[in-house]
Image (cartoon, rainbow, N blue to C red):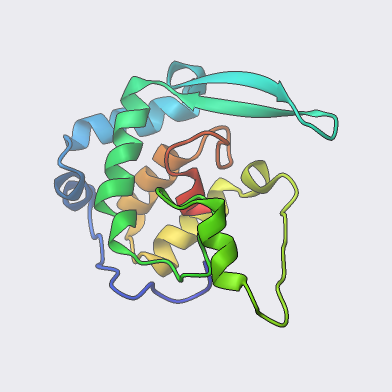
Length: 165
């Protein structure tokens, strides 16, 4: 995402406001956010998978509680924003053929792959996105950042990972 507020973004001014948007208890959000910092394995199952080109990648499979919270963040916050037609990667219901069709017949098509995209997207960068683009004040920014990152970066495999990179 670029700089500046996302069109349609509504300021999230407090933890209670965030809890009301997500329809979850504020105590639950605070507890999970702080426990992720102490022991992420309580909320994720980490597995290592080999890459086709060699090496390996860590996949963070969200456990029930964090998965439920991330699903709420996705459905009640991120789903309010419409992505440009040219941005279809990772969009639910989108197929590779749909993505290719948008670019068919164009004189120039740029295809980029960001190396280590998820682990290289830091929690600090995610916090800036929540602050600058989604207009979150301090505590909701802290909670949303902790609830969508693990071990200091965006987890590959998280429900909201494609939304925050």
